[in-house]
Image 1 (cartoon, rainbow, N blue to C red):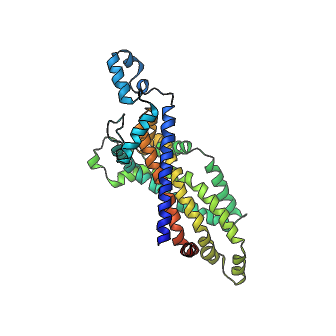
Image 2: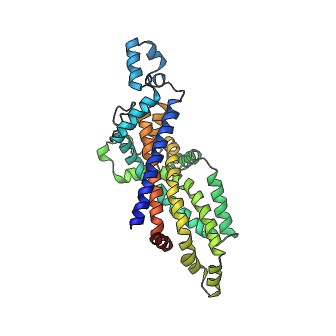
Image 3: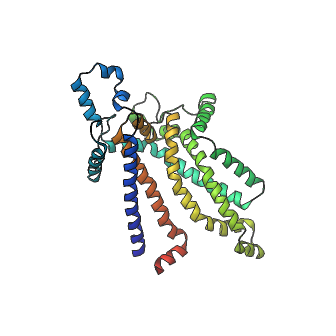
Length: 330
């Protein structure tokens, strides 16, 4: 127990340092952006009609006349106090905007993450168990095609087929258009999240399935599987008793590592489906030079990804008893 607490403490320190680096790099990239926040959000015509005092007030509001390092130091000091600042576009606290958008994306991200993990593990195990045969060739072909397909193109294709041609699902948004928020049901939110979640899960399956296939194929060619076959065990028992146990660790790693891919893919998918989630807010903040909001979204999503990797590391001991024994000896 003491060893695991020490391990978790070291991981948390490393996560804090990584978040610091992510925020600093994001700040530098935004500061070096060629976009002028005043022209982007106010417009050249409106700026030309303003007085010098009004322009200076806008420059101070957007922080254009403040040195970048000074702005970053001030932002970091406020974050350590729990204040991520105020969004320049939404005129609301960053944490409030991120929390609202994250709650909208939560159903989408969680369903895509779970579905892609289950399908990827299943397809990888089947392909590895039937290596070189027809199921393996079909699954590999599917994974190669999907892994080379852009997420936004797949989203447009699903939108065209299931929304425009068949009319089974809505074209976009997370709730019905014109309906009051109090009247929106859970079914309405799930119904609108089907196509975006399906797009993300389809694109996330390929990586998990291909890696699981390689591990499963190695297991099926190992000496202990050969011995199990010599004892008369059937193929189903070998896959369930020996195969799944040995692919669980890489499957857990890939599953939690896919969090970053799903969050990154949601940026494009939410744009296609006009889904008002965290990904769409990130695009709006980037195009509008809303530095506090973009920094808040980047840091919070990075923390979710790093936290997922930490959970995966802690789950290793629960899945593999050898890791627990090694931790106890050390």
